[in-house]
Image 1 (spheres, helix red, strand yellow):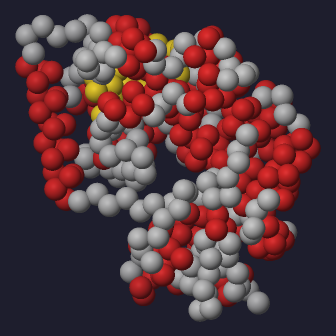
Image 2: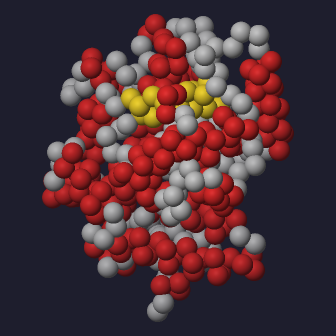
Image 3: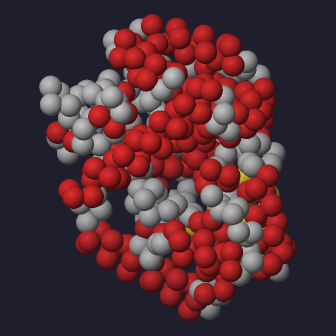
Length: 385
Ligand SMILES: [Zn+2]
């Protein structure tokens, strides 16, 4: 039997049976395809209406207009969270050159940025002649390391992927550090380059209430974390400010086309051709979390997005698209199991958080013992071998 007809994968999308407690019915259709309102801790479909988009767009235009017309502008109009990926690179160029904003580019080093991302930053700043307005904050790396180690060793869930948990906590910390920088410099606006499909948590603006109540995890007040770690999170006096800097995600309302973004930054010589692939610029941490999730939940975490892309295809195209994504799913899964997927990055990451692969696998195994879907999970892993 070819893998496309394998009865362990949803016939309509590509989700494997029992992955994150998502089940196939007798007809081989998964919970999400059966019921579009179905959601779990790892999956929820976010619907952005045209009205929401129009309102947000209006706000963006008004915000920029207000800045440009202001009589006494700050030395910096805004901070841009600058990761060195294609999206934030293109955004930096647009903010400076198209919108004429005075931007402070801020990069938070988690300790696990790839060299490609670092080189992208260097070449972009040189090209734009903008190095004087870049701030590289690397003093928090030991806190990131403690955070990652804690999350990898204390992930107790049958339904929530570690990749998502790590991404959320890591971005909360990155955002906290940026907000603190903005408060210190009295910069009222922060801009982030979330792409148009990154809408799972936020659409267009991060609510201030979220910054005050959701960003600082409870566990940061427990061992092994210290005041040296907690100082990177928003302090009570910062949370109590009447207004925090606004954080906007303009790609949610502007024209976003991945290919033209890539074309734009490579043709201007900001970033070398071939250095825009997220696989190269994404941090090693996510890749290690993908490996964790595969052994723990029996699937590649990207499957949730891939499956949604298949569902969005028109019916006549769906079967072809499904094959394409299922093939990619299988090849990433196999490569992760064989140690051929980002293995250097993953090894480096594990050694930096002082965790051997052996210890990680035994941690995963003891979590897996208590999972009611254990048999299905093991079957799904076997299918990838
Ligand atoms: Zn499905």
